[in-house]
Length: 137
Image (tube, rainbow, N blue to C red; front, side, top):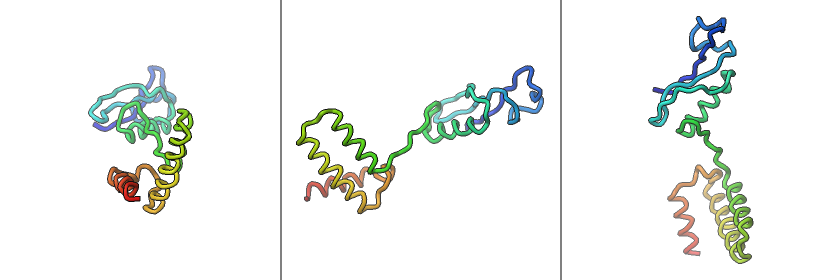
């Protein structure tokens, strides 16, 4: 059963006879259905229909109820975050130099040559190919 949003009209709502799918009142919006084998029937704590739809789309994109998927960053952005993390961990200068050489210089060059812009485009085979090129160089 897919996730379905509906209005749960209050007892004093003038539109309660119009049904659960009536979108033009300020009653609470609920969700009912299952996602990833998990059944849910709960209030979304929203009254705006469009906001409720966005919330449910986020759940469906992540595949889990209550979890909204984070955006997958671009390769360049991920590399910058990795280097910033290495610096924040106070790694030795030599380690930072190696990370910059391998990740910032070689990996970005490899991704650019292969046309990878987002981390989503990378798979295990692409990373293995990059690693094998490192060994050969």
